[in-house]
Image (cartoon, rainbow, N blue to C red; front, side, top):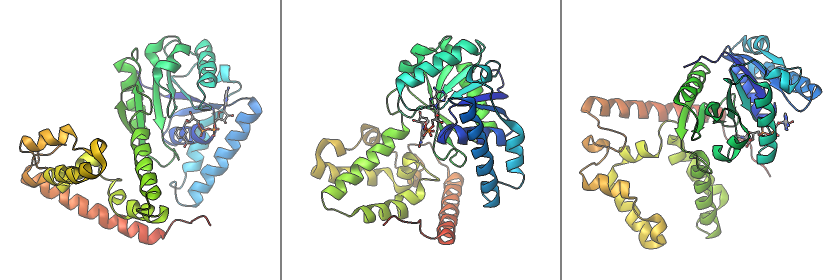
Length: 320
Ligand SMILES: NC(=O)c1ccc[n+]([C@@H]2O[C@H](COP(=O)([O-])OP(=O)(O)OC[C@H]3O[C@@H](n4cnc5c(N)ncnc54)[C@H](O)[C@@H]3O)[C@@H](O)[C@H]2O)c1
């Protein structure tokens, strides 16, 4: 696996700018390149101002803005900026044609071994890879907004992407204090399928007059959403008890039909005697008594601290 130390972010907008900040803050040598030298310099000024504000607001540690600015530079031109770096991160507009044009241009100037990542939220690797030479070095590296503060990054390997390339990017993410999770190359990947499914159901609930927009948001924020920073849906189901979930689906299936039927994974798990943390056999693994107690202690501490944080911050500002 080759270690990434030098990075160029192409497209220094909302996402590209944030990604450049994160990487520069964590010691990578980062260049940015946008549509023109002027636009790139403007972006650098914006990132400097923003980093200073984040530090003043206590969102970045003291000295962070200086670290960022000592590691972050504006490239002279896109071609120049990508010509000799270990990793190029493409973060231009979410338009397959624009992205393909930019990726082809990057490939023309970059070293053949330069790893190239795209920050696309929706376009499959198999579509964009058409514009990439040496496709084994190409993958999706999907940061979330706002990149300076959201730790998770969705990784999508294409058919040709090598494990070595994935490992190099995972290593970069760890060194940048980020957590990568790999998913298959399908439209929407995992993050947006989950996010969009939630919004779709929330919309249906409002349309059917079951609850208002405000009440749906309140329920999500204050109940299961409260847990999601610490546990995913599988871990939450383990803690609730798998038979309870399986029964719950039966009620939903009776009302809403097939789309809410008990998932096979859950039926099979319950049939095999897996009840979640309750009996130490869950969807996320097996739990001995000691681990079970540790999970409960972690959970209680996490939710209590989350409550403190929410009380400290107060409610989010609302539109009129
Ligand atoms: N905004 C989000 O919430 C979000 C979240 C995750 C991923 N993404 C993805 O990140 C990518 C960028 O989105 P964004 O919100 O940062 O957009 P943005 O409009 O803020 O930034 C895009 C930048 O790309 C530059 N650009 C456009 N064409 C270029 C070219 N030919 N060469 C060089 N630079 C060029 C633009 O000048 C602009 O600065 C998209 O693929 C988007 O889907 C966005």
